[in-house]
Length: 315
Length: 259
Ligand SMILES: Nc1ncnc2c1ncn2[C@@H]1O[C@H](COP(=O)(O)OP(=O)(O)OP(=O)(O)O)[C@@H](O)[C@H]1O
Ligand SMILES: [Mg+2]
Image 1 (tube, rainbow over the protein chains, first blue to last red):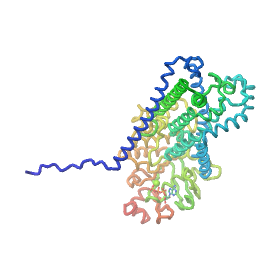
Image 2: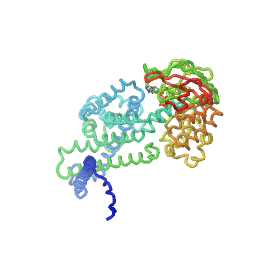
Image 3: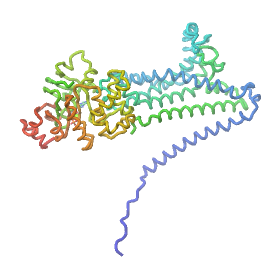
Image 4: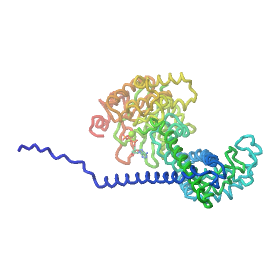
C-alpha cells in the first residue's frame, strides 16, 4: 500500500500542571458558589416562619409588623455606613496619594506599615475605644453643634449626654475601614503607568495636576472597588457598633441625639443571646436583608465601574 | 513661536553616574535637529534635559546651562512646569490618556494652562491641532471615543496634536516612530516636515534614513565603553554628517559599520 497514512498529528497534550491548575481553579470557584448558595438557602429557609407567623407571637416585634421593625435597622445600617464612607474615602485617598506620590520613600514605608497595623486591630478594641474614649471626648462638640448649628437637620438637638450617637458609631466605622481603603488605593495609585504620568508632566502639569489628569482617572475603578470593600465591612460590622451605639430610635437624619436607629448586624448581636423560638427566625430574616443589601451595593459598584470600561485603559 | 536653543557644557548625572558629558551645541529656530548614536549613549537622557523632564527620574541632575532664547532653564527660580509648557515632548511609546476621549486628550494640556475655554474655542483648537497632526480626517467622526481606541500610529499623532495644542516653542521627540509601522512612520515624517515651519524640532532616532530625510542638522553621540559618559562627537548639517563626516566614528556609525 502506498503511504497514504496521514502523518500522525501531534495531539494537544494536556500537561499535568495545567490539569491540576484548571481542576483546582474550577473546584475553588464551585466551592465559593456552593457556600454562597448554602448561606442564601439557610437564610431564606429560616426566614420563612417570620412571614407565616402572626407578628403577635414574636416577642421582639412587640405587635408591630415585620417591615416597620426592620425599616429603622435598614436605615441605620445604610446611614451609618454611608457617613463612615463619606469620611473615610477622601481621607484614604489623601493618605494613599501622599504615600504613593508625595512622601519621601522612608516616610512612605513607615506610614504604610502603620496603616497595615491599624487594619489588624480587632473590632472589639475599636468598640471599647469608641464607647469609652471617643464618645465622652466628643460629646462637648456635639452639644456645641446642636446649640449653634441646630437649625441644620443633621445637627438637630437635643445632644446626647453620653456621646454614643450614630455619628460616633460612623466615626469608629470610618477608622475601621480606613486601612483597607487606603492600602488598596495606594496599590492602585502605584500602578499608574509612568508613561501617563510623564505625558501629563510633559504638558506642563504640576504634580497635583498630574495626579488629577493621570493618576486619579486611571485609579477610579480601583478607588470604587476599594470603597465597596470598605462599605461591605462597615455594613456588616457588628461588635464595634453594638458597643458604641445606644440605639433606641427610629428613622431620623439627626446625628447627635440619644435616639438613634440601630444597625442590622449590631441588633442581631445584641438580641441573639436572649432570643428563642420564632424570635431567632426574625433575626435571621434581618440577616437575609443585610445579605441582600450587600449584594445590591456590590452590583451597583460593578455597574459604575463597567459603565466607563471603554475608557479604563484596559484595551 | 519657535526659539533658539543653546546648550553650554552640559553634564547629566544619575546619582553619581555621569551619563552624558560636556555637551555644547546650538539649535536654530524653525529647524529639525536629529540626535543619532548607539544605544545607551545618552540621547534620551540629554533630550530630556531640554525641558527638565529628567527631573522626573529620582536622582537625575544636571550641571551646565541650557538657554532658550537666551534665558537659562536651570537658573534658580525657574519653574520646570513653565519650562515644559514652552518645550513640549513626544515619547517613544504613544501615551494618550486612556481615561480620556480623543477630544479631551487634545485639550488636556490647554485645560491645565488656561482653565477656561469656550465650547467653540475648544472645538476650533481640537480641529486645528488634529489637522496640524494630520489626524483630523481619520478621527473627526469619533472625537468622543477613547484616546486608546485608535491605532498606534494614530495614537502617536494624537500625542503630537496634544503637544502642539498648547503651542510650545520647541517640540522634542524621543524616537517617535520606533513603535510604528512604515506607513505611520512616513505620516509622522511628513508631519515633522510641516511642523518645522512653526516649531523648533529635536528628534532622537535610530533610523539613519529617517534622520537624513527629516533633519536639517544632525548630532552624533557616542560612548567610549560601558560605564563611560556619552559625548557629542560631531554636529553638522545632515548632508555633511551622512556624506562627508569629519570623524571616523561618525562615518563608521552612519555607514552601518557599528552601532
Ligand atoms: N533612570 C535611569 N537611572 C540610571 N541610569 C540610567 C537611567 N536611564 C538611563 N540610564 C543610563 O544612562 C545612560 C544613557 O541612557 P539613555 O537612555 O539616555 O541612552 P539612549 O541613547 O537613549 O539609548 P537608546 O538608544 O537605547 O534609547 C545609559 O548608560 C543608561 O544605563
Ligand atoms: Mg533612548
